[in-house]
Amino acid sequence: MPLRRIQFNERTHRNPERITNAIVRGAPRGYRHISFEADFPYLDAIREGLIIAARHGYPRRYFFLRMTVTLRKLHEEEENNRAEFILRFENALRILRVRQVNLLISRVPLHLNETNLSCRFDRNHELLARLIWPMMCHYCYQRRAHAIGLSNWSVLGLFHIMSLRMIVPHAYIQERFSRRVFLACLELNIAYIKRSDFSSH
Image 1 (cartoon, rainbow, N blue to C red):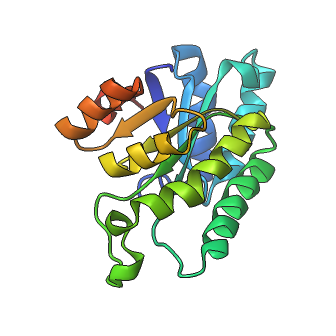
Image 2 (image 1 turned 120 degrees about the vertical axis):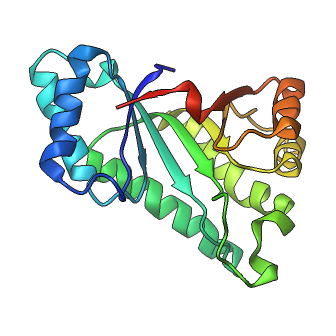
């Protein structure tokens, strides 16, 4: 995974032209890793940046695209959770006009606003693993995601995923260091990555 990264988020990147230029100007300087949320409102600007970069000798394969799907709440109906995940991922691919991302991440926010305890992620490790991970494995089998991983999931969530006996997460990205999660990743042979390990642009 390239360490020199351009991370786009809605709070700090609201100018489509600057987003496009960041990719085009960053490519010659080694900024190959492009990180974004699946529902980032300016995905078309990222697409334009990739197109222009290709004209300057930096084709799609030069870039490492990391897409994150953040699970902001759990719906009572299980099928609604699956449908939302599928919609966000596939819609992002359609807007970007790419067949595959290099790394697909399922992220749980550090701070949850959900007050309905029946929908709290920390009380639904098994449900979350059973709903989300099989879909991510499916995209990996289809080669729509070269690798799949997690961000901010709990230790229990990790072990529930392992109990499914499917693909082992390729990476775990932690926004706030947790010794318990770090040791669990070592035990399960999952690459543990801190956000601070990346050089951002």
